[in-house]
Every structure is written in C-alpha cells, then in structure tokens.
Length: 604
Image 1 (cartoon, helix red, strand yellow):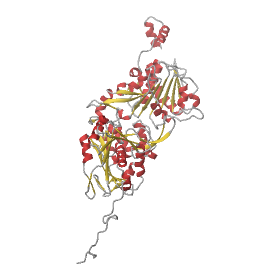
Image 2 (image 1 turned 90 degrees about the vertical axis):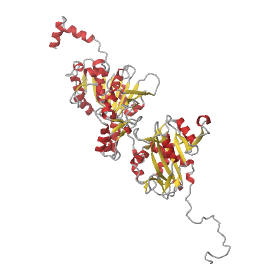
Image 3 (image 1 turned 180 degrees about the vertical axis):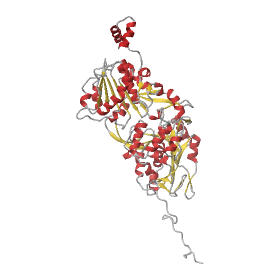
Image 4 (image 1 turned 135 degrees about the vertical axis):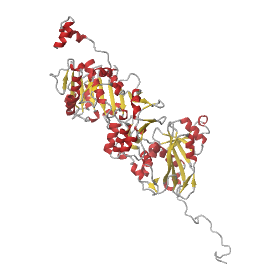
C-alpha cells in the first residue's frame, strides 16, 4: 500500500481518490483465453511445466474456454480424456469470472475431501500467483472451502453434501469430474439438479461440467447427448489437407508387436489419402484445427458440448496411445480406463458381447481360400466404405453349417470384381464360385446400384432396416431408369441376423449348424466380429428393445457387417433347405438293372 500511495501522490491526487476511481474503471474486454494468456501463472503444484499459461500449447482449448463469453450459452459440457488440460481450462474460466465478471460461485467436486485438497493445492496457488486475482483476494477472511474476494465468493463443496449444495444462490456453478459424483445424496435430488437450482434467479448464469466419461448413463455423456450443439475437433492431414477427427482406429503398428514395439513403431494413417502422419506433424495440425458442431436444435444454442480424446494431447505420442492399449486390452478394468480416460468414450458392459477368443476357437483344419468337401454353396458379404470395401466369403452346407473361406479389404471396384468372380476350391480340389454376393448400399449408393446391375444375378444391393421386421428381410424393386433392369433391393433386419451369428457361436466347431473359421484365423477378423454387443434401447414412447451397438466408436465392425450380409445371402439362396449329400454308391431311387441272362457277373 505505501508504494502504491506514493506513486499515486506523485500524480497530484490523494491515494483514496485513486482507489475510488479504480473501482469505477471498467474491466478489460478480454475473452477467457486472452485473460489466461495475460494473467494466468501455472504453479509447480499444478503443472509439470510451471510458468506463464500459453493457449497456443493447447489450441483446442481456446474455443472451449471462450464459450464462457457467449451471452446466450448457459451450459458448457467438456467431455475429455487425460493429458489434455481440461481442468486448467475450467480454472481459467474461474479466474476470469473473479477478475472480469464477478458473481457468487459454486464449485462442486465428487467429495468434500477432494474439494479441500483442490482449494489448497490448485485454486489458492492460482490466485496468489496472479496479480489480477491476488489483489481482490481476502486471504484472512477466507477458508479452505470458502474463498472470499472483494466483490464475490467461491464456495467449494462435495457432491455428497446436499445441505451445502442447496444452501446458497450462485451465478456460476462449476462441476469437476462429475461422473464420479454420487447419483443420489441421501433423500435429496441428484447433485447436479441441486446445484443447478441455485442459478435460477440469474439470467446470466453459467454452468460448466468437465469430466472423463464412465458409462453412457453417466453425467458427462448425458450432458454431451443433451446439448443443443455437439462439437468435435477437426485437424487437417499434412499431406492431402482433408479435415478429420483423430480416431484410435487410424493409429497403426506392426501386427504381432508387443507393447514396447508398438510404442516405437506406431504412426497415424490419414483416413482419406492413407499417408503416414508422425508425431512431429501433430503440433501444426492442432494449430490449424477447428471445432465443428452438429446442431441438434434450431435457434440459439444455450447448451454446448465438446468431446476430445487423448490422441490430441501434445504431451502424448501416437506410440504412447498404442502402448497404453496393448497394456490394457486383456484386462477389462484396464481396458475400461483406456476407453474412458484416453478415448473419452463411455464404457459398455460386455456381458452380452461375443468374445473374440470364442471366434478363434472355431477354427477347423482347413486352409484359407479353401473349404470342406461338405460345402455346397458360397456367398460373399460386402461392406462399402467411402473409398474402399471389406468382404468376407463364406461356404454353406446342410443344416446352415458354414465355413469362412476368405476375407479382406479391396481398394477398387475391379479388385472387388476379382473377389466375387474368382474360383474357390474345396479340400478335394473341386471348384466353387460365389453363388450370391450381398453388397451394402449405405455409401456410394448410385455406384453400388450400377455395379450390382452389371452383375445381375450374382450381386444384389442391401441396406439395414430402420425398424424391426417380422421377417429377416424384405424385397423391393428399384426404379428401372435409376438402377436398370428392375434391380432388387434387399432390406434386412440386422438385429435378427446378428442374433443368428451370436447363437451359432455357442455350437462346437465342426458340429451340425456350426459357424466355423479356417485354421490360423487372424485376430483382426475375430475382433471385428466381436465389435458389437446387445444393449437395451428405449424409444421416445418408453418402449425398450434389444439392439446391437458398437462397443466403442473406435472399434471397426466392417467384417461383422460383411458376415451379416453373408447370412442374408444364405437366406436368399435357401441354404436352410440344403440336405446332406447322398453317400457314394447306389441311390435309393435308382432302378435296378435287369439281369436278362438270369445269372451273376461270373457267368462265364
């Protein structure tokens, strides 16, 4: 104070006049990110890289923080993985509110113990290191769970304390790690509801929710689902410039690599040009990235949500993510943490999931590209992607017994044509050809119709039904001028067909009606077949149905779609009516030859 008085007295005004004028001075017009760049100092207790905050290090946080400045936005949800700076972004909003736009504030943590720890180790150091906050802070009048400033207060509470949640009004409410909150607080309402009730009297209220997800029913994922606009972060490929989200499925490493080898060899593959992207290119991609929103409601958006996985983290390499997956994939608890904390996706109970090991155990002693002699018909299921195809060829015998013959990825229409038209041999060398191929028409629909028309009778277009069907499929004839020659479109009930595949997995390999694969089947095939699980789904009228859904958005399910098309092809071909072939020798309905001489073969 003496130093400040002396400086102001040199201007010719008493210090008390200068203090009074300072109160009337309007705050700087800054956004949250600009304020943080100017005033936020990271402490050693709060960061591995203490010092001045730089939004440029984590450019994806800028839009998330600046949403706090949007007048019509009242609810912000940030569903994010680890090592992304989500808690720091929330703290920047808290600091900005204190310095620029004060109002009573409530910060809610999973427990009171965590609230006290965060106050001591994170929030109070943040305040003391920033002059813009320190000058407003009443350190003597504050407690660990109530920080007092000259124009506002911050109450820190645990979600397990209903009395603290409902005891005072608040313009700002911040929720930290809300998926760890207790669902109910005694006989009271949900902690989110209790805290949000405190903001009703403020027209300019802000509610901020930050967390890694746990389950689809968890608070953060529900915040994501219920938002007016859902934002994902798109970055450009350094080779082709195509904007895309970073997905775990595009991180590649050598097959059979262990955790250490995966860490060293992993890279990212552009989903459009398929060029290799290494870690050195990621910072520039992040700087050129942008949030793109999917609007779910018309009009002004009051609730916005952002979702970001740990692949975007500037502190993690693609190899780190691959190694974490390799270390987690065989333990359900570890895999759940990987899906939640690294991929920022909800975990699904796998009790109804087909295990990939079950598929591996269906192997019989025949080679890839061949089939047992009992096979009578061959089908091909084709899944169409934007710029490539997946296929699976399956042979069928009596009692719906089937054997995987081949599978893979085709890059062009010509490659796909080769797959459908090639010869496949059984173990005796007898040649078989694909009797019917079912081709998904979800992508490149017109091209699919044209391709099927060129291979009339061998390839038919299909699509999944948007509703449950009474039968496994229905047939409609496409417009002749659009598709040519009265092409038939087969609409299938994918849930019924996937239920069929799952039920066949319970039959011993080689047994009547079994679903078999060749010896040495690849793990990738097994994983894709097991990429979905049965879950309960409730419609708008509250009716519950059981449907198949992907375990996680990063899991590839192309081959499961191929095999679903194979089952459809088998149904169309009437495979269920095949019978066991007659043994070699005289057939029952073959007439006996007359022995016109009335003697046996040895008559001479």
